[in-house]
Image (cartoon, rainbow, N blue to C red; front, side, top):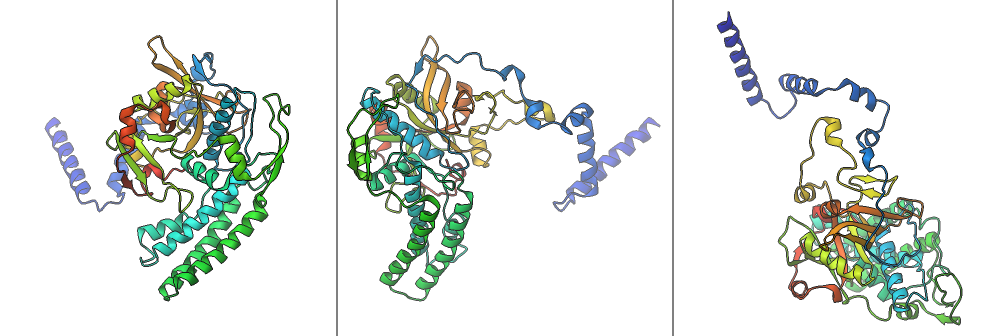
Length: 467
């Protein structure tokens, strides 16, 4: 009898194996039986009942991390006002301006302060991105419409994301103005509808330009038509954001809000020169941690720029240890840094705390999530999604980082009074970009930064996330 049962079991396994071998890729009845049997073995009625009426995060949250008791930082830069990007993707501009206004205050020994208008520079950001898309369509007009590059322009005609080098290009070209002379509009703080409408208009215009090229129209005729199209975009932006200010009168204030300089009239470019002291481009390097690629090499992302005649995102790929050393050197000299992260991973929004064990999703679902940083990036599971301003680090007795603090742009009520604290372990896994003044960059990294870059396509997984 025992032999018979064994024979039947062997025959059943053989038949199951044969059925699996004949499977055409779909879920057949035999596969479904195996799936449900495996799921039944892992099922937990208590957890299932809890999930029916609770959020996954609430059930997976590690309540030992639900409050932050250690908020001390051994190295911290001076605090400044916290801003709120609201429902817009302009974190890159907020972090860039945080660095620019902090550098201005530092040059004046914190006796003067300035707050820049995001609305003003965002206007030109959108106009320049519209031109980048239309000119890109012209440049690729000899390619079929299903070509990868043509598809890129039509799929991503415009967006409100960006990078520090984009902010530098825009500020040097169009200048800066104080927030008092061009405050935020409703649409500047809620960009999705404007972006949707601009995208539709640009796709329509792009098709027309392709047809003009195919029809043999002259370069001058195509340029004239593109200029007319950008006039339509300019008008849409003017209605939604307000036409950019051309000149204004301004007096500087101290950190207490008291006027301390005589009022004078500026153009935006004069105000940029007055507050920044000269060009930003050329004063910094951009570092990236991308463990998929060789370290100490320079890479450049094609079309990852804001202006057609501007700078692509070009970076030196470095281990996190090198990035941390440059960050610490900068912070010790009271200099804040533009930085970006995959901030959605393991974020406790209530406390503004980022740690690898904030949520235990694996135990909750009876599985594991073992991918490393390189695998997460390669499979679109992680990338540089949000820019924040690195402001502080806590070091142990040997000078090694324990935790970091960033100034966020979600308002003073979010997180730790507008800041987020992250453990060094989390920093290593989910930090990606850092902009560092060259004075804090070691010679061997400066040398790597000067080498000819390897070109990367904008469809690369790491850059499909826009800061």
